[in-house]
Length: 422
Image (cartoon, rainbow, N blue to C red; front, side, top):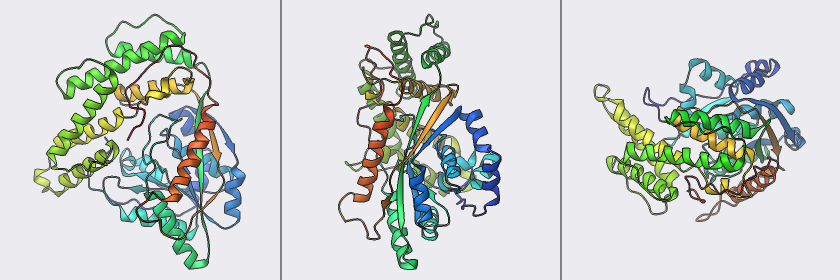
């Protein structure tokens, strides 16, 4: 659950010292963490010279990577090491509420908090001030949240370019300095036999569902129908849990109906209006904000977290169900990494955590710098800077997606989501 009900939000500021991040890099602690916790054991960095040139020119640098795995923020530490710099990064508040050690380590590595359930002016001001000073490069994920769809980009958030433009205006006025954005493409590639891995993981999922495991098979035409069956079983279980019974028919309308049920129930409880232009992600964000605001407005003696936690989890589930794109597993487009990502999303759903047992290599590709204008974005239209950033990231991801190994099959597998998630 991403909404924290244990205590009210308290801003975690950036740590400005260099001792801790230098020690972390020299001792290769991020390498050990990525290998042990995420099974990311190798990396290839491309065009780091572009990033280095911006630093050498005295520009304030904003890195904007795509966000497809929980390893992403730590992986960017390899890029920082390559150009001999430390990074600041904005991170969701809930990440600072796991263990005291992880909260300590996150901050020492340059992370500071953002309250996604509200308007966090402190986090925005901290990000702007970092770019004004140019003390270190700043990393922001313009998609906001993550899911395991490495080859697709979610809609970008306007807050990223608001921060960049505001900082560019103030930095130009302060000392004539510039702010530049470097889009960064991250692509994870499987090391080893993805078919053997997929067969074993599917057998474990089948056992978790109390099924007799399928006969061992490494053929794509056998693995894909099994993946589809497990996906359908998970959806049916959630329909029974939240609606009372499993429905029949194709998965896409069933999935959409369940999302609508989850969101409508929560919006009704908090008397939330839904603008016609809002997609699922906007509605989820509004529900999370209402859960947090309503709960902490209660006197301490009346705070019973269980019903609010259920609403927060329902909103999280709605967003989670939206993260299985149809086009990921269409004939001719299936790769080994797409199979691994889909299975890991189902593992997160059933076990609460993906099994990071498939060794991965990450490619980190830095794009050319984009100059950030000091003027405000035009009123009444999408920020051209945001459009440029979106186009650059999508172009990189298309190219990087072709580097994964094809997963040959003539069997279509149509999973839980629409082809155009909101």
